[in-house]
Image (tube, rainbow, N blue to C red; front, side, top):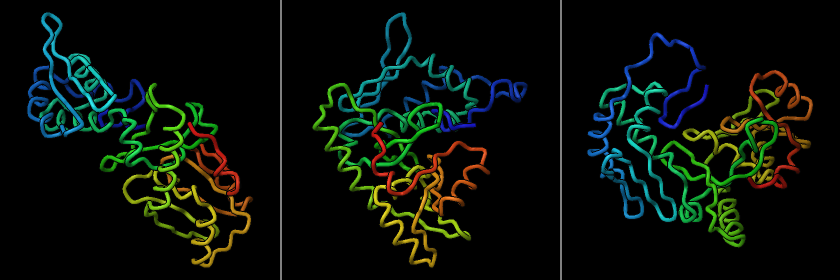
Length: 256
């Protein structure tokens, strides 16, 4: 199961259908939006409700070059399908989460983006570098706008790599394994891989020597480091998709 756009967990279709929550009412969503959106708006982020004669109300989201418009009826339907409770508290939490998951602007990526590894595609057989922006305990991937030129892409990616060095990560040794993790935002664990030599040094201070370190990468999970044989066994024992790589090849992975 995976988290949906409203912070809820998407279960397999048909599971516990008889216990589905009551649908989210459009009028209730409208009332929540009127109260919540002004609190979420900022100098760069503009949020509002636009009434269209004969076509209902849309939620307008505008931040720098990114503009979104979604009909409240569609948003209420999406919330209902995701199992959002039809209470004021449930709708408020879902709407806040939806706004937090809005597309990352080019300016935001340039100002605070961090380089991490993520899946190249839905098949989950390869990983590559991407830029994420952290909002609370959520990391949202940056998809460059059509206006972003090659020079800007390079600047954003270079800056995000530098910030990855500064991400505070925990290191835990369990037998022949060293695990790198982040307390609040799991995907940031792979930020350590921008400097695998420093990972080796940090692991060595714990007393674990890994001269031929391989890493087992499962995006949004801790990064496991071990000798090749241990790394292969670990990858084979888990039901989750993962990629096992020698440490020297990590920095040469492609950008998504």
